[in-house]
Length: 317
Image (tube, rainbow, N blue to C red):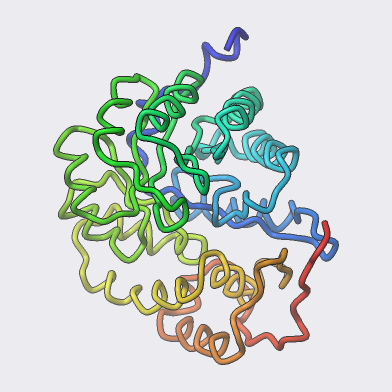
């Protein structure tokens, strides 16, 4: 926080206006290392199709399977290659306040525009401890708070958010509890993004959400941009719903990893404990692509049904 770089950093206000933020997938090489060539292609597809921000190393990007060195390297690489075209939000959250501070310090040092922070998970803490945790990381730079109790095991209640909203560095909240909570924050002038693709259309147009932090936009960024920018569009929302339901039938990012491999934009490589969807579900995906239109999906190869033997499961990396 003492370098001259801080003076040129993006402010929380610059983050608050973003409508479409993609939680970007991290592709792998056969030995389990990052496939940066495929990653760069994915980023370019997002930018060309109108995504305004990316979350690097989030749940979708499998930050939970990365070392911190990998994590910060990928954030720095993203900033270096794409930071002038898209806002880079680094997932530097942790259940350890010490780790969250250290990772955020490093993330901002390599140029990320904002940090994404969940509440301490598994061990959990009191509401007072949650406030202290968030205040510790908010002091470092623009921050988005991520509420996903299905993963952390603990809700971030509104009174915690209202307390930390006094910080000028709070850009907003990624909210997964539902649209009633989205509306509560928007009515209190707290910026909020939907964290649920199946609810994001209504969140945006009926409940005051600024936009969405999306998994689905990895595959169909142009359609997700239209959903966030084009006004109420229940027909497009309905068209996308079977794809979204398919995507989340198993915990994210299992469906996305399977889909992007079948679209030919990433290698069919999984870091365990993630494994691909079964064959019947892979066949369903091809049918969904044909119904929605291959031209709406990322990549240029024909979608295909991959065999079990096509996938590589990496245990040590």
